[in-house]
Image (cartoon, rainbow, N blue to C red; front, side):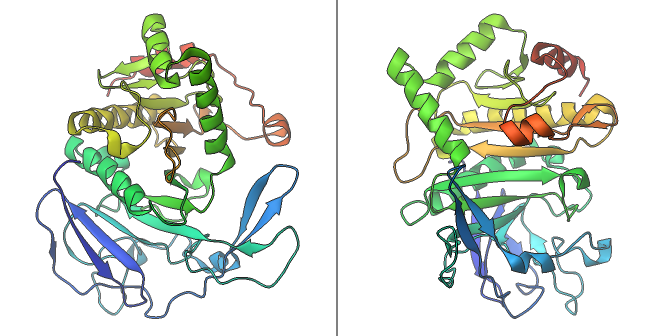
Length: 359
């Protein structure tokens, strides 16, 4: 891990807050919370017997903050103590706090008996505020701040290890087109008490590849893409951005390390800095592609925690939601009904367009 500063705090409503910085931290106000009383969160889960997956229910989330005016931005540092936000004033780069309206909760109460194997929605939900600049973007962070963010995601994942949590997903939703309700640059972390189906499938496929070849899937993937060359957007040496030849979204981009690892914490300081630079480059290209802020979903895929597999391929997936200028990609019948995507453009063509973008 690179050198960084961090400090833990407790909010007035009992939630945890951690501040991270590249330089010594300085907090110049009280630790705030929009309310001194905690939200009565009682998330539950029910089992979908045909899909073989859990569905989360969190009725209290209907009351969460929705597109507030700038003066009531809950992710900005508090400027008026009479209207507290989630964050204090001071010198820090990144903040992480427990979601006030969580879909999962470690202390979720056991619900009354219900249908479909109803059980408590056990897990953790955190908010990661990337910057104190409310108008900024993730791609506006410096190379060092991008590396710090990767270290923060790694730290939150490590903190979740050893208990009931089995899988951690760090992600960012950006754009009202994908349902974002707060414009301030931020992401979220969901920590599950089980392995979700997407990560389980990835693990199974990676294990199968290793059993058949004796090699890590990511090792063979990077080698094949370098030999082909047509789908690589940027080769940074220790990390690459690639429009995979099996991309489901038109400009889907993966950020992968050159060396096969399974967790962010396994990256060296140099690998993490390069990984962050390549991620930043990919985000800048997506915004420059059509001259607008690309709506997207960013997901960080890591191995399960309590029995991490060396075969699981650590990588970041970017799902851009514009398939052309002014044209959204909507999930329609074949995607929603069958789970099989229809793409309007071959990935190698999309990769060529992204390579041509000036950033």
